[in-house]
Every structure is written in C-alpha cells, then in structure tokens.
Image 1 (cartoon, rainbow, N blue to C red):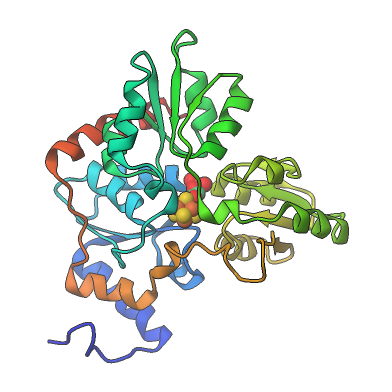
Image 2: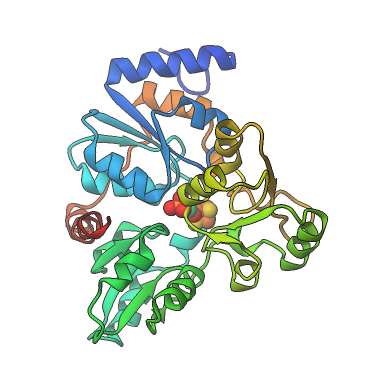
Length: 318
Ligand code: 13P
Ligand code: SF4
C-alpha cells in the first residue's frame, strides 16, 4: 500500500477520475466552498456559501462527507452528522476569524451580559457554537436578528465587520466581539476607488466581512452565493469583486461574457486569497478519501451543545 508520501503523482485528468471512483466506492459527497481552488470546485458535488453547505451537510444521504473548505465548516458537518465520517483534506485549514474568538475569553465576555441572546456567525469553533443561542451566516444574519425579541440585548460574535453591518441593517444595537477575517480586512479602499475610476461601468460587489470603508463603495453587499446571483441578474457586463477571489471561478463559468476584476488588497501580494482555504489541494482531497483521514472528531458534549443553535438557524432561515 502507498503512503501519501510515496503515492505516485497523477495527472490532473487522472486525479479527477480517481476522485470520482473514490466517491462512488465510499458513498462520499464532496462539498466545496467558493473560496477553494477552481479545480477543487470542479471536483465537488456541491459548491456553495456557508448556509448552503450547512444545509447540504444536514440533508445528505452520503456515508462520508469530504469537506473542501476550512475546519469550522467541516466541524459543522460533523456536528450535524455524528455517525458519519467527515474528512477535511488538510487539517491545518483553519480560519483567522474563528481563531480570533477563544472560548474562555468569550465565556467571560458573555457572562458580562447575562440577559443577552448570543448570535454567532458560523465562522467560529464548535466550542463557541456551544456557547451560542443561534448561529447565522452572512446570507441570513440580518433576517435572523430581525426575528429576535426587540427587548433583549444581542451579543454578535465573532466578526465585528459583519456585526456592524447587521446592526446598521436591522437598527439593533449589537454587542460586538472584536474579531475579523484577515482576507476581508486587507482590501484597500484607496485602490478600490482608483479601480472604480478606471472602470466606471463596473458594479462593485462586496462581502459584509469587509470593513465599512470598503462597503461604502459597494453597489451590492451579500454572501458569496448572493454575490454570484447578483452578477447573474445584473445588466452590467463588468464587476469589481471584494471578497476572496475563488468565487470568480464560478462567476466566470456561469457568465463567460462578463468581466470580473478582483478588488485589490493593500501591498502587492495576492493576500486576498485565504491562506487557510488554499491549503486544500486536489491531491490532498484524493488522499483523504484513500486514507479516510484527516477525520474531524469532536468531544460529544461540545458537539451536542453546538448542534442546537445550528438547528435553530436552519429552522429560522427562509
Ligand atoms: P459565505 O460563503 O457564507 O459568504 O462566507 C464567506 C466566508 O468567509 C467563508 O469563510
Ligand atoms: Fe476565515 Fe476569512 Fe478564510 Fe473565510 S476567508 S475562512 S473568514 S480567514
């Protein structure tokens, strides 16, 4: 038997074929987020935003879930499917936003507001979910907060940028945890304005994890799926896209006649690519299915406590 290190290299075509065979043999489904490399998206059975991925994970009949995304996403799939094998191609695929909210510190923060309802963005660890009343994603956060009782304070964690945007949209005075995503904070307002001047016809699409200064210049703000749909219905032919550029793969596939320009980050690097998401590769995806690891495992008490707020979200989401 080959180990990962000794396994012979495959061509891209072989890899796609191998992955298809493995899916069939294992009764596996590959779920991928839009921020994955294009070839991983092309190998997936379902590509979506965090809400779509959670719904797929909740509904699938497959015995094995291979999550081409980051750790908190695969964890969510495991929370919903305790008896299934959930694989993450690279166990180091974490999330700066989830890391910005350690459970001990958050428990102390929460204790200061005993009356508050805790709404946590799905981009957090299972331990934070277990401390929450309801989970949200970028596509349902405004709608969910609007459904909460008006006379109760609300803690919103961990993303301060999404929280500020939700507060603005709902008119609710949210108590914000001070976390953020390294990818969405890196966009340069100055360079975005310069790009708009160069492309006055382009519509600016932005994710609500971006800072307020960037969102001010957006024509449309939404989750990755919402941005994709907006580009499809818009009568514009070009778009400046202020989110991780992996989404542009699907945009170009769905709309070959339209032009998508990634919003520029500060500096000259490609640091608007999520370094965590991009740890997954097609080879690692294939190897995870052959080796049946890396596997997501969770302590049962945390898993059970984290499930209730996710199910609440799924019930409350229209
Ligand atoms: P959505 O796909 O739900 O918009 O989330 C974006 C994101 O940052 C995922 O890590
Ligand atoms: Fe986390 Fe940001 Fe990467 Fe999404 S894009 S996984 S929020 S670091």
